[in-house]
Each structure stands twice: as structure tokens, then as C-alpha cells.
Image (tube, rainbow, N blue to C red; front, side, top):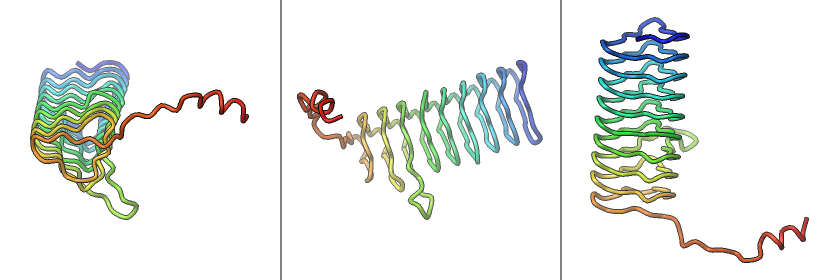
Length: 185
């Protein structure tokens, strides 16, 4: 099913039993059987696996490859990234220059920090890992199979299998701060 306002550019292949919703643009990409691409996604030079669910408002570009039964949700961008079978990045993430295994959860607000100002580096997230919301992964770094990364963590070194990585310090409340600030303005 191809909904209104869809653009399928040269080099695009759509499999059987797919649904491509309104406003989607696909160029030089393959969409395998049973995949669904929701409204206003852009897919360029990429591959969408069988039964995958993309969007709305997702952007797959520059050799993004999402495997079968994956989920790439709203406002997620993938660039030069492999997202393994059954993995999901449901919303508000940037995953660039990454290799992500099967059954991985990518929390909202997660980014792979792939550029050091001179070169691009790869982030690897192995099978079954869990990445909490608002996480930054500073490449090159590996999160091993089954590891967890806590919400709000900045990952600067490899996380061993079965470990929990956290980097946030203890919360500190500064009483009276708002009133003091108002006095100074």
C-alpha cells in the first residue's frame, strides 16, 4: 500500500505486503517484505528489513541498515548504522557510525558521539544490551552483550557484559537559588 504524497526515487525496491504512509521519500533503498514506514520519513541509501517498523518522522541515510522486526520510531536518525534484529530505538535518538546487535533497547534521547573533530569512530552495542534514556556514547566504545547503561550516562569506556554503567553524580538541590537569582536581575 502506497499512501498519498510518497516519492519513490531511482534505485528503490519495495517488497510485498509493505505499507508506505503519506509524505515518505525513499531513494536508492530497499524495503523488505512486510515493513511499514509511517508518515514523513526519509530513507536514502539504506535498507529496511522484513517486518520492520519505521517512523513517523524518522531519517535513515548513508548506509543505514535495519534488520528484521526492528523499530525505529519518531524523530530517530540513523547514519551508517546497523540495527540488529528485534532491536528498537523508539524515539528521539541519533545513531551514527554504530553497530548495534539483536534485541537491544535504545532509550529516548540517546546519541552516539561519533566525531572527534577530525575523524569518525564506531560505537558497538552488543546483543541484548539496554541503553537508558538521555545517554551519550563517546566513540570508539563498546557496550558488551547484556550490559545496562543507566539513564543520563555518558559512556567513555567499554561496558563489560552484565555490568551497569552509570556516570551521573548524586543530585544536589541548591535551596533559595531562584530567589537569589531574581534579586540579581
